Length: 518
Image (cartoon, rainbow, N blue to C red; front, side):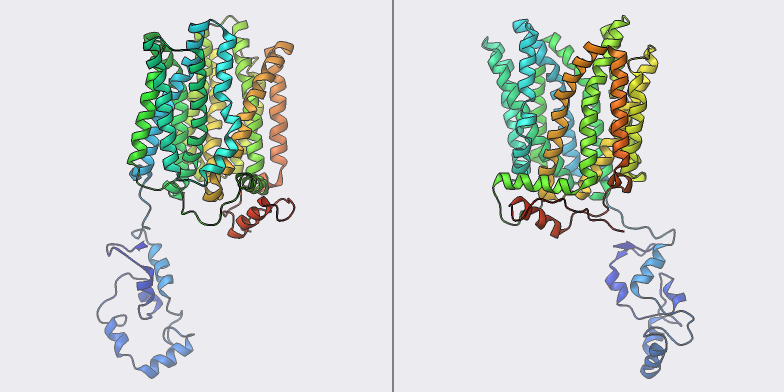
């Protein structure tokens, strides 16, 4: 649908049905009632002369025309080029009621989760005085990130995503709300707190995959970068504000953070109930065993070399940043820095992440995703060796902020590519594979961090981690699929059928070629 000056919008088919006119007249949006270009002139032209003229001019126009009269489509193009003939654009993202409801509800919910996240270990320590018990509760709370990613992906590609997300919020509301209630009744135990942590972690896995998949449906593709930029800003801001708010509420009352988190789930629940749009395309085709559907998502990812390599690079660098965080903490403590100063330094990640998330949408619309990935990896490889050496706190904050900023830009840019390339019917499954590798790298990175810092010290560990970043940057840049950039079209229907056949075991596993426009 196009808009021509002040005449309003009209369909191209209506223009295409108009009688042919000269090139000069076709370039003007208005046609007089009479004259050489008017309807009357066209009607009074003799039929034989018109047929002869059309034959000489290739079926259009008159003999004297230096160029043939253009079709309706050509005329649309000519009018479009005028400064006063703008395209009818998609409404801005801020006018997308369903997305803004989803975003607002999750902004409150994510902040609530960050508030309770710091309260779990604090409450366990207050109840038992055992750091080991606090670690066990934290481990069990994150165990669903590894156990349920793949089954959750298969399920969320089968069901009504919005209903399941509502069910997840209800479960979390009841679980988190039981903590202050049990404390008020004097019946709170470590077992209950552990079960609550496990339930919340499980519901997070299902809800997150549903939300990531829903964005592809709720938001027009032209607004993917802006939507992901908003989501990234939400996450970074919640991470920045959650810990201090959680600590303050814990001082007010030991279970107040859990009550606040329960209220945040209630807010998310209300916003989901107000959303009218579906969160998935119409389900078509037969269903298969859950393992076959999981394999289908894995096979699809194996065939998309660019997405696969970028995902693996992100997972490895996630592990490296677990080492970076410990290096900063130990190095600053060795220099006599206070816990407050260390916290401010690490907050540089969050501040840089907020800046990067705001700029991420603008950058991803103007820069190819592969350039963002390669430049980010090389920047990280350059900055990482310095984290254990720099003693100036201002420079350290700038360094960490730069790393966090590029991480946010990476997330927005690559997330946009994922939304455009992954079919809706596979969205949750493919996302679950990526989440499994990303979350699975975190405990490995934490374990390596302790061993390396204990053995070599923070400065040497920073250099070793920087060398690892350098290797990842070099390998990723050397990959042909990364240098070429992401595919420019979504997976074809035949590709989806091929993946389904492979998932059912119809023929042996083989890597699928990427669909690409030359």
